[in-house]
Amino acid sequence: MSTAALLPIASGRRTRAQLKVLVRPLRRRLAGAMLLLIAGTIAGLVTPPLLGHIVDLATSGGDTADFLLAGTGLIAGAIGEAALAGIGFALLAQVGETMLAGLRERFVESALRLPLEQVERAGAGDLTSRVTNDVTVIAEAARSALPEFVRAMLTIVLTLAGMALLDWRFLVAALIAVPVQAYTVRWYARRAVPLYARQRIAVADQQHHLLATIDGAPTIRAFRLAPEHRDRVGAKSEQAVDLLLRGVALQTRFYARLHVAEFAGLAAVLATGFFLVRGDVVSIGTATAAALYFHGLFSPINTALALADDAQAAASGLNRLVGVADLADPAVPTGLADPAVSEGATAVEGLAAVAEGADAVVVRDLGYSYVAGRPVLADVDLRIARGERVAVVGSSGAGKTTLAKMIAGVHQPTAGRVEVPAGEVALITQEVHVFAGPLGDDLSLARAGASEEDVRAALAKVDALGWVEQLPDGLDTEVGSGGHVLTAAQAQQLAFARLILADPPVAILDEATAEAGSAGARLLERAATAALEGRTALIVAHRLTQAVAADRVVMMEAGRVVEIGAHEDLILRDGPYAVLWQAWSDQRAQA
Image 1 (cartoon, helix red, strand yellow):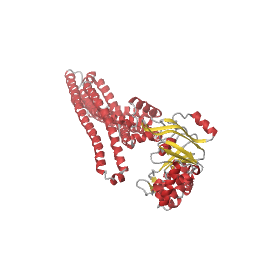
Image 2 (image 1 turned 180 degrees about the horizontal axis):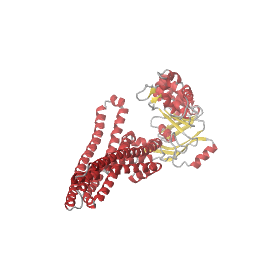
Image 3 (image 1 turned 60 degrees about the vertical axis):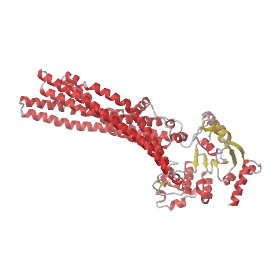
Image 4 (image 1 turned 135 degrees about the vertical axis):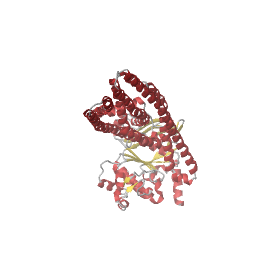
């Protein structure tokens, strides 16, 4: 899978803008979480001064009541910190999860609107890795890394403020560590950002090859290609693991440099405390509190800088999610197809066609190339009237399936235009997917809120209700991956039942009965006829019996329409269709 084929990745600026939009309705909850975290952090920061006070009491011979009061303050501070910070931590995590949920919903909505051509070119691995690996990383960041990072930053800022209150020279001594830490973070960020981006792409590439190998396992075994595919998946996995190990090595060097900063800062604070105590500027307890403050910075600083690693991974994942979420215009629905699918088909033209009420599909001067300079469709003109049933026939490679996909909106024209003023288009191919879950839910996906009576009526119309009722749990039987295995004919009947429930005005069948074999062909042809009742239909026919039943037949050769007419007329013209019909009839007679 080439990098050029990958789905878009948003810029950091665009991702930040998207996050602002998502956080806007959660501003009050976010403000409340921040106030609680600040209060909890302040409560925790009373510990070093109280311990310093205890040191002063011990050196000056304080009485028991003073020790008890200081001890009570330590307990109260610990309880206050735990309660306030805990609630704030939970609220902040809730804000992060809510934002992620909104982004995930936008991602799924946008992914379902993507042109299928673009998804196919990107490969299944790119899309699945974004909705699995990337979402997992972001979810973990929203659930724990974000609250921990915010709390760590608050602790750092307030601790430095506390050191300044003890004596400004302690703050200056502590800041000696900052240049080393700043250099370390910049050094790490320059290397981590591109490394994590490459790692995400490598994982997507590995998943793409793994999924393709699993899907094609029967073919791979049949042609004895297992070693080649195993080596290919192994190479992609090795590449992903190599990038992961490079990330681990980078982190190790990152932490080693941080330890140098910790040593330099602590040594400076202790030396400052020594000279200030010797000069009677501060007490031993104050110097102790300053040392404890700086030592207490080790954990939040390391947490904040370590979470920079998680932040880089989450930012990379966010960019990939936002890249897809922004890709499709939500104002243009593409659930089945668009009223005006291609460039050049304007809303005005669509409305005019609807007003005329004559044509359901209009194809004008259509051209398409999968590879530039090698057209598979050229100068195709076709008009399909409302309620008309048109069969498209021709030899393999004639362009039948490409034409069907163009009308369905899967591909965008290279030249010319496609208009579907009748409304939505449903495309059913010979490769039918059965969704995992109860069979009734599988069918209900076609129409939200469909009743059980609606589902049963659709099944009955395509002659499927009988075998469905004989399943172990009827409509509640688990089908799809890990469930009850359906035959090719049964899966196709479910697709026709979904078509009835979706009820689009235009339907396209791309060899939708080809997988059943001759035994189930007549059954599926009856089901197809029932499902197409009352609709405009374009049928890519591999059996010419479907052409006989159509209102018109479109004969294609080398990406062009060479004949159009009724079956009875075409077989009398002695043209390409008549030759095809004779050859097919002779083959049936010999069988």
